[in-house]
Length: 416
Ligand SMILES: *[C@@H]1O[C@H](CO)[C@@H](O)[C@H](O)[C@H]1NC(C)=O
Ligand SMILES: *[C@@H]1O[C@H](CO)[C@@H](O)[C@H](O)[C@H]1NC(C)=O
Ligand SMILES: *[C@@H]1O[C@H](CO)[C@@H](O)[C@H](O)[C@H]1NC(C)=O
Ligand SMILES: *[C@@H]1O[C@H](CO)[C@@H](O)[C@H](O)[C@H]1NC(C)=O
Ligand SMILES: *[C@@H]1O[C@H](CO)[C@@H](O)[C@H](O)[C@H]1NC(C)=O
Ligand SMILES: *[C@@H]1O[C@H](CO)[C@@H](O)[C@H](O)[C@H]1NC(C)=O
Ligand SMILES: *[C@@H]1O[C@H](CO)[C@@H](O)[C@H](O)[C@H]1NC(C)=O
Image 1 (cartoon, rainbow, N blue to C red):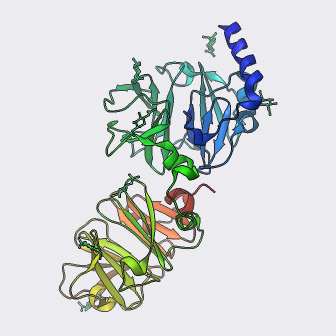
Image 2 (image 1 turned 60 degrees about the vertical axis):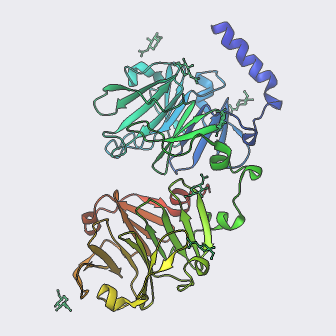
């Protein structure tokens, strides 16, 4: 085996100058992870693709010791540890090569590594195909999901308990990837999005990886307009997610719609919400309808193939929300009764069941923001090019500022 791997290595070296892979040729990835800044890293036989486009680099240029310790042209699996309860390992990047595991922090191999996989992840086999982190609450406990052939192992990070799962609708994954809280299994040049708890694949998969993760021009329908909005660092005016999980973000004269299937569409506000035209102050979803607030007025739209303004609208902010406009943001947490209105650093509750609306329960939130939305997983505040996630409404009034995320990168999937 030693001799074989030596020959393989020599062969790889011998043909390497001509064999720089092109990600638009439909290659299979060995491993995929994000780095500590959320930039995706795709590994393919000794090469590394950073972000969603651009040429391959040699993986050993970024991860020197991978090559020194294990003279191998490939990475079996990789993931980023992302468990806030484990601060000493939070954001480490973990690699699996044959029987060994390498733990990197800020591109430096950690002391004591490489280790045997069995030492760190007892019960997990060698020669893995794929691995992906699964923090709570996306998995019930902070976990790592390992893939080998058609076998799937859930490794409980805290108790080290291993649970075998049957993900019957899943293909065998060659790499697995958590991106923007979604889970992807790559197989060949295709991928499927899956539910990490059940392994179920919902929707029409597999899909072509180059359409979504490679930005190869000949595969992409993206216009420059989409790219510009996706990567813009300009602040958002308003944001909301509807009950279907589609997200609408408003910026100047455009709105960006991120569908549940992660497709991004950019359209002029004027075309779709013609009564509003541009420069929205706030947007919220309440009982299936989309509300846009601009200056002194509230516009309510029934969302459908064509969004139609509901009868009786626009109404004044005072009439609809019981407060003088303009406001900064508004959101509803799927409660079917209240809308929360933010003006400066103050938040109010509006009982939408009351015939006479009144913004009550005035209290001070952590910081003023440009836009806010709420969903089953909590509240998101957007400020400049950053957003902050709060698991519960209550946390908005605490002092603990949560982790800062980048809008362009993590909300819209820009790669730079
Ligand atoms: C990376 O690997 C290539 C090919 O094996 C080699 O030529 C190069 O010197 C290596 N670079 C580093 C930084 O180790
Ligand atoms: C790692 O595995 C190798 C080969 O199975 C074994 O010789 C070695 O003792 C192991 N190291 C540790 C620290 O367990
Ligand atoms: C999936 O892996 C199993 C081995 O674990 C293998 O028997 C099966 O053929 C593989 N399926 C495909 C489609 O490659
Ligand atoms: C990729 O998916 C398409 C369907 O979207 C399927 O026809 C094709 O066989 C798949 N190819 C591979 C290599 O998995
Ligand atoms: C995403 O879903 C929308 C409909 O909701 C559809 O028009 C669009 O083609 C889908 N995109 C992809 C890539 O599946
Ligand atoms: C939506 O608008 C288009 C163009 O104005 C029209 O052709 C279509 O019938 C409308 N669809 C519905 C469901 O009203
Ligand atoms: C609105 O609420 C405030 C304080 O809770 C109260 O003083 C006021 O009378 C209310 N106004 C209406 C119109 O209900």
